[in-house]
Image (cartoon, rainbow, N blue to C red; front, side, top):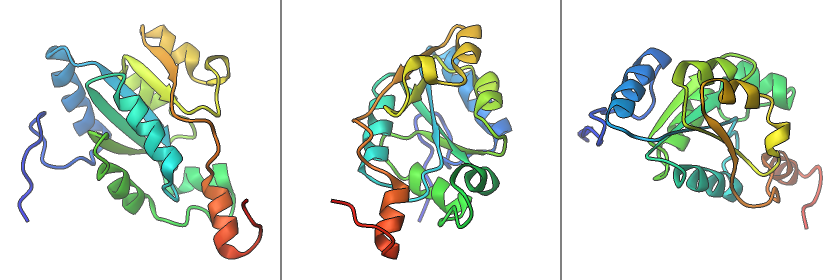
Length: 170
């Protein structure tokens, strides 16, 4: 299988931050509108797909920050993630709406936002603009926060519980 460069001249969609910054800078020079979405994406479900597709509709280049294994564990608890970070990144990168993926190690997406300075920081409908912890960071460089996707009716945690027989989803 041969990797062909995408429209940004990159042959892989999973990038270390330094390489991602070079792609972002080149895209900005071309006038591309940059969108950043982020999450754990431990068990991918339709809510994730709708969130990322809606995020992509806000710009030309969708970058997805995937929480590292350590940060996912801190956010979701012991036993998580079920899927290792490299595999989660590969799964997310395979989605048509996603241009690039990067794994971030920090407890929040703040440092990634400050590095990329996207035009839009897309968050799911489990937030309101006022609830987004990084909203002031995004505004500090002229970006905006957008709430996208369908109502929060989907949950990786609920899927995991259902599969493990701990609860039943109706």
